[in-house]
Length: 402
Image 1 (cartoon, helix red, strand yellow):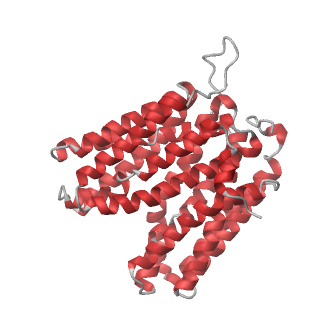
Image 2: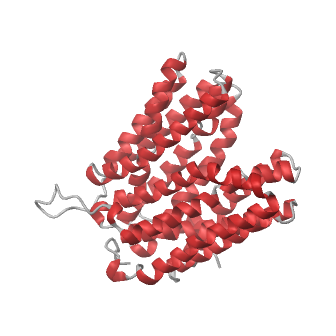
Image 3: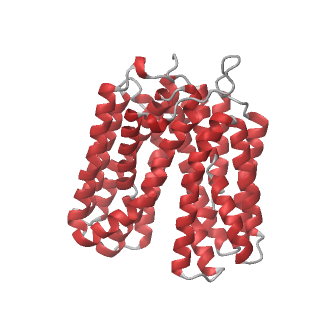
């Protein structure tokens, strides 16, 4: 029987619980990114081409921010990196809401884009620092639950505020981010593992020279490319091919978030006795099936079944991947290893549209979605290979007892 997610979260260390609460507060006020295109078009009257370039530039800045955040996490520490990112991006967001014109808005947007995601490797590293290997997957699942719940609330609230005042939207984002910074300042200590005396200048090995790790990251990029098709191409299938109103697609995506919030933490705990990369491979298989059936019937029941399958695949795979990365990484390089893993999802989001949209146009719904399912399967095969040759106690430099 599945346990309550709140009961499982209460078993985590107090600092991790605080981090989960702070993540929820921050994500509940994440208004800028979802409504950025609307503000640039409606308030600053920029053309579509300019808006596309700015949004792409923001995405590239976010990717760089995550990678730099991993280096800062290992060198400055978790707490300092969190405070730099959250306080800096919070202030930048408030200033964005006060910008008098586009000439002031754009430099602030670039600053915000760089600072906003610096904290993500530090947040993941704290979970890895404080939890033993046996509980890391649950910790990462709890962070994802907070992110999804907060984002759902943020989208609903932001939609109401956007038509009233875009400036209030940006200021609200900044205030919730600053609130997270205040929580970190008051309640989150430094968790970076202590180095041996005289070893303060030692820098751990680079993830870019770790062959097996890079194979896992390649699988993660592939999984991300196919996963994001449900957020870019599925709305076209639901509304244009099947003829449903946009609210149907919105309800399907909302159901995805609800399933994650209710079941990811309990399911992650329930499968904790199984080999994690086999669980992740099963997740990739279920996601592939969920993608494949999207184009078969073009009926809402088929779309709903697809959502259930690929959400279950997401629930099974993602906490296990995060847990393995935390165990695989040398402690002195933990921030960089986790940042590269996080960046694979940003990369998948960035490249999936130019890769998959032409394929969708060429194949049509009935053929496209099964092809997406097939493209997901090599990721599952890579997970099984890592399970066989890599996920062994003697190779896990960051593994801890428990």
